[in-house]
Amino acid sequence: MRRDNNRRLFNLNNQDKTKRMFFISAIILILAMVAFFITFIIYGNILRNDDELAKINSKSITDLGKSSSNMQTEQASYSMGKSINDVKEDINNSENSEEKNTKIAINTSNMEKEDNTIQNTSKNENDTNKTKTTNNKVEELKELTFTKPVQGEIIRDFAKDTLIYSETLKEWITHMGIDIKADKTTVVKSAEDGIIKSIKNDPRYGITVVIEHAKGYVSVYSNLLTAEFVKEGEKVSKGQTIGTVGNTATFEIADEPHLHFEILKDGEYQDPNLYLK
Image 1 (spheres, helix red, strand yellow):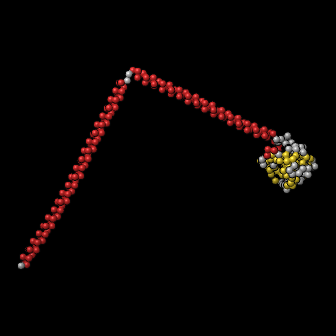
Image 2 (image 1 turned 90 degrees about the vertical axis):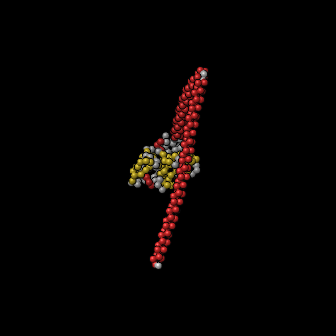
């Protein structure tokens, strides 16, 4: 009885395994068929597209050849259709074109020459204007001249860019004017027409008179004994008395009696020797 049952169970197991194997085989077969079918469809589409592309390319090449042939035929027929007169006219037109180009080149050359002439003229005018400006400056410099405020020897010269030794200060200093030797109480005169700008007792240069002149010039008279001959705002003439020589400049007290004289142009110190006549 047990043996019969065991056989029956064994047969059932074998049948199940057989069914399972059959089912798996069927599924594999179906999948293989589906894959083959899909591959066939895709490959067919690729072949179809390649054929169409080949046809298109073949047609394009044929059309291009026909077009080129037609163009060559038209050009040949056009050339053959020209008469002798047409050929002569083409030659004349070519010669006229060359003549025009030559004329244009000549005209361009003339234009360049004219430009050079204009530039040279402009340069000459600029040079002339510069010369006039320089001459005007020289004339302005010559136009305004100063007379010596006192007669005497220049014992200390103008030294704006160099140094001179000061006996009073015992050191090397600049000197923005000239010192004209003169005895005390010697009359000091205005070097040029102008207006008395100021009268002051400078702590360095003593009693000082400042006169304002035309064209930005100013003259300064220092180391005076007195300046009671004029007053501020007064208009003075060249050669008019404005004071007397003294010895009131503390910066030059060790020197002999003299007039310390300065000239400025637009606020810049000038060498009085260039203006005195």
